[in-house]
Amino acid sequence: MWSDTDRDNPVSYEEMMKDYRQDRKKFFWFLEEIVPIVIGKDNYAKVNWKELPSKWLRKSMEVYALMCLENYYGKIEDDYFQVEGKRREYVYTTTDQNIKKREFQGWGAKAPGQFNEMKKKVANWRKTDYSIALEKEFLEKRKAEYQQKQSQRETKSKANVQVPQVEEVEFSDDEDDGVKLNVYDIPATAI
Image (cartoon, rainbow, N blue to C red; front, side, top):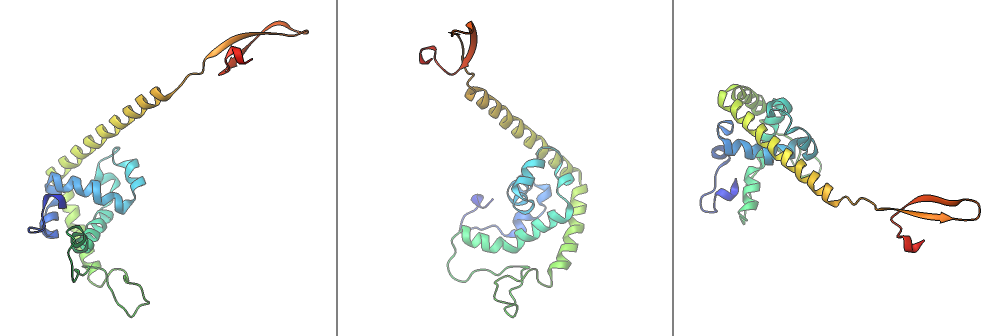
């Protein structure tokens, strides 16, 4: 999403994520780039092509992903645009220096209230016809991508499979004359 902007005209978090479930580009970006980080890339890979996002992405995880994005958005944007000087503060993370010597001390006091408010919004957004249609479109896109990858893997594995050549070689010794054995991968001249 940042690639659509430039240093002179950055997009705010509010503008970027406003009604993200009503904007195909924003919603797909969120599902493809942010959600895998929050739920784990392996988990995401297992489920994103099987069911609608609202089936495998719990409301609380969606809210958590949104809040993480909002919390770190300014810092990420500063890094992306290589801003020098004073960096923006985190929105929800507390930096209480009285607690040990870690930079981050977890969510601050305003986070729980925001979480509950966002959860209600997400629940309402999920019910809209357009949001449901976007989820269906996303699922169809991911299914098609998955099937294409599977097809490519099958084609590649078929091309890489080498069937061993079997040669029938006659062996004879004093006890068994004329016994035929199958010899794999050994040229007859090597025996």
